[in-house]
Length: 306
Length: 306
Image 1: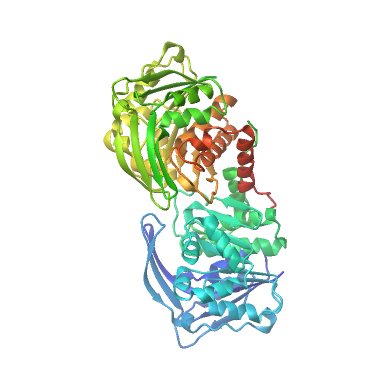
Image 2: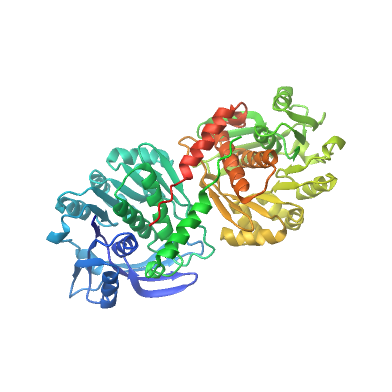
């Protein structure tokens, strides 16, 4: 199975209570594809960067088995630059600057040999672009997308139109509430289900994630960490691990969807332990397996009955 | 095994977005003992009420197999009355009135035939009273206690002294942060562990609960409900179910502690589905078992490995 990933590529400046990293690798497509690369080796990346994007980061992505032929390098603008500052609790952040640069003219051209991809993963970008990408793919089996409050507030109708084309939606709790006008997340799920996606994951940050299907609800905790170094990219890393597992295992049963959420949570927990993308840049299968097993110990119980 | 429960008994007036209940059965000891009564039948209750406390509620507690000989009925004051109003999100509430009445002169006298109880459950009351109760018990095996921000803010030293006498602490996330000055809950756990309790449960409301022991962390979700009718008493119902199971099963292994947290969560989820104590007033073992099994489906995953 091959996975097409389309989204932003960025150079981020990140401040947390633990330090600062400048012009470090960021962007939804970057985290998504790197995370998925630990599960499958046929990933095709579409994104846009500027002249200042380091060649060594392109080399890194290729070293993870990611096809970067679809990454456009614009010669006359800089790469998308986001500068964010996290507060003490790590759950809230301020955007200090958002310089769209190359991302502002993103008009993804899907290379011909990408169009047969069976799995599609659309990072948080303009919903019009998400729709254009989907329409270029000949026969997608699974389309997953993310979105954010910026698009919901400014282009709600287009977001809803995208959802009509999507199988799996991954969304934050606050975004789900904004999109549906419902505080209760089960009610919010029902409203989003009517918009199209048959599988919906609502991410709750440090409180984990809910998976909703037509038949079941699954609750996965976030891995409890004493030191969260940098939450940037955790949501995309989650989605990349989830879809990477689904793509590898080729099954959408309830059991396998649950497992994919745990693999997503596993990758996200490894991501936030270091700055930027460093936490998932060079992981061993052993480290992933250990964290996965820790999730099992964290959540499973023996069922003696009263 | 016999369980001694000491705490407040109240008549509550509760307003939620779904309605209002006036002078309805409340208080920590009431929820704790009722919840535990679904697991064990040797519960001894100590509390104080006023002349207006309905006899039918004493009869109800007795019908649950709870020994009410330790409930003092004061002839010249009214029962503790709390009037609370929940906001739309059900996570925040205002206290409209708090009339201590009988609770204001609570000086628990432990009847002689109560003093051999092996398990002790101390609801959220003055930490001085908690200490006095513990000292009256001849040979307690497990002492569990709850506390709240009111005591932490006003009598922190006494709260810490109580914790030195306690085996199992059940506390809210905001209270744990207040008590320790730590935002991260793992760090907060470590500081509270140093105060005494070897088992600590941090409740996170709609986000579930963490169980900490010296060897493990366990994460239990709250059961996702589309309609939370009234969260009053959910924390005490949790603690009552947890200690009820521990008292019944007589084991403090990691596996059994995890199970106790799930039984606590099961009872709490049934509690919040109705006003006041109604959700746990008359439960069948089948209903408890069904909710328990739903927790299993909600959290367990099969562990295929990458």
